[in-house]
Image (cartoon, rainbow, N blue to C red; front, side, top):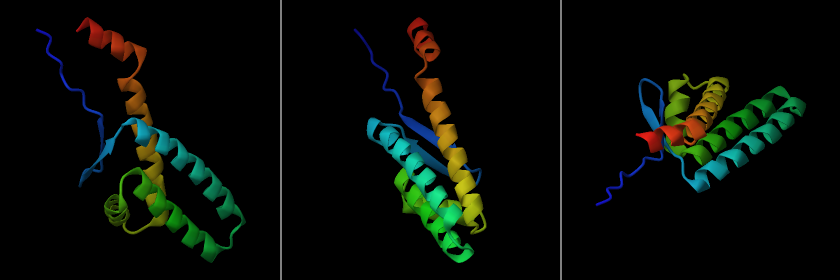
Length: 119
């Protein structure tokens, strides 16, 4: 008999006070690339904006990105965690994306697959 162990595609993002769970399926991995591209476009707009509109656009970009990556509840949690500071919320977003990408690559690297096959 062959027993198949179900693999988890959940990547936890731990904030200490709470944890978000990123579902690393095909659709979400593709979406993450789009989120990154959208952030780059928004960053270029911010360079040209005045202070007030830049602040509003940064908040909107942060909220939209967190919502696309997880959901609106995740944005609310992270924004509260940041002390309701947009720049920190964006910084956490960048950390989360980098961490998710690294974890995904580690799980699906040739070395990881060889280790699994040897186990």
